[in-house]
Amino acid sequence: MGRGGIGGAAAAAAAAAGVENTDSTRGFLNDVKRIIIKVGTAVVTGPNGRLAMGRLGALCEQVKQLNFEGYEVILVTSGAVGVGRQRLKYRKLVNSSFADLQNPQMDLDGKACATVGQSGLMAIYDSLFNQLDVTSSQLLVTDRDFLDPSFGNQLRETVVSLLDLKVIPVFNENDAISTRRQPYEDSSGIFWDNDSLARLLAEELHADLLIMLSDVDGLFSGPPSDPQSKIIHTYVHEQHGKLISFGEKSRVGRGGMQSKVAAAVTAASKGVPVVIARCYLVHQCLYID
Image (cartoon, rainbow, N blue to C red; front, side, top):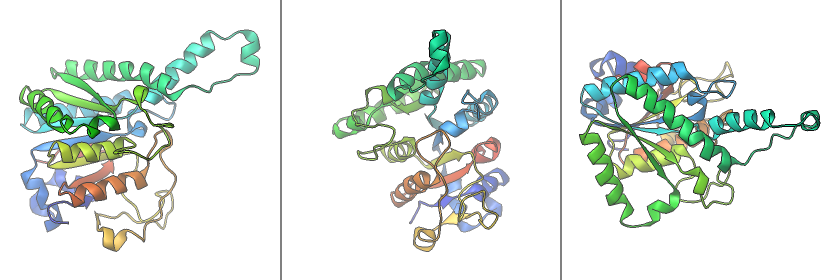
């Protein structure tokens, strides 16, 4: 795959230890300058659906450190729909009559959840970064934006301007105005979830590394809960493509490991190296000096 490659949790650990102790497949870490970090809903939120403040705080601290050391860091975050759903469920419960409580109906429109949740999600990022004396910015995109031939240049100009000012661009899909019939299930279009969005942005913004944070240790040969599954340190599509048995998708997001691998394979084929690793080991995932 040339410069591109896909690493698992071992790549993150190797990054923390220093590339001199790694094999040649980790050589891309020497030349990293611009990093895109994709954070999924299962990372942003806890089992109860509320924001995982500890993980977000640790992530922001590491982003600040990388920023201080001269790396250009771009975040792609999920979680708006999940955060909005929690808030709207509570609001609906508060406004329910006794009769409503006897027969609760908690079906909520995903776009409404995204609208409510996006502002709350960004408020948290802004607050956390502000405590660290770092400025963040919000950029919302849809797949239709990328159909405009001039959009890529405009996007790069804006992002480069932000990075020059040491501002952290925080991307998310603009679910609220998505034109897909079922934006949380429809896999048509230029991108269809934040894994594929992160891959697309890595290409458009000429990233040197794409890190995809997960709630599991990395890429396994089977479902991580299966004792027979083994972690794959370096994924080679021709070697591993037909051997992996993917488990269920993320408990809260649209994607899952299959989505991450598909995005990573495409990114690697375009020359963008990819690391897939557990979010809880944030220092290992991000510390690449």
